[in-house]
Length: 246
Image (spheres, rainbow, N blue to C red):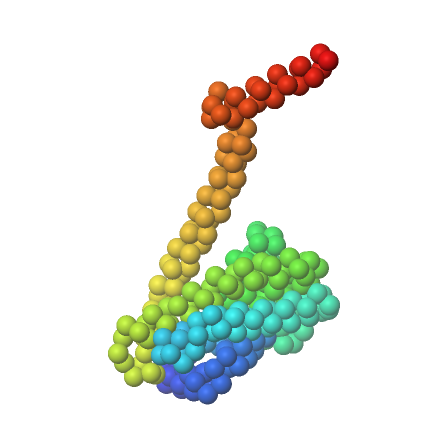
């Protein structure tokens, strides 16, 4: 997109966000999920700027953005699920996703299976096609929502955080702050997303490791138990034996 057109687009979206706040966050991202040719990062970073400027709360901004993403993605998935290949070959989808890119999507889905729904959130140019293709393959709706939600709650709040951090750190006019924050998100956002994914993976592995060690600790041998517990067990055994003799 030419610089002038991009500037006008960012200015327009920023005005919508400032005027309608959470409603604009939800609505724009819902339309993006339906195929509106605006990168999600524009709205997410803009929402983060509002948080940094004190115009919105990060929790509600994250909720509005994630729900907007899920709603738009679910419509595309539902159309693919209901109409199957006819939807993929329809004129709107062929416009949004030319045949060559549809082949790319099919290969991407064949390589990753249902996990492609999660990975598509972080790969430009295949998102809407993967969701439509997943629906056409009759993927379970609940499974789709869980995978899409997992990707959305990682990418959405991360981009919002970048915007909020930039708004607090850089003293520029609002449109210039928007433009610079978006450049930072596009250049370094994937590294932050990778760091978040690694942190989640480490946390999950740590919890699994602790769960595996817990049963071993629960079944300690008598010699490693406190002496008071061992004595109580011996007294109970003596009592049982004397009762049996009677």
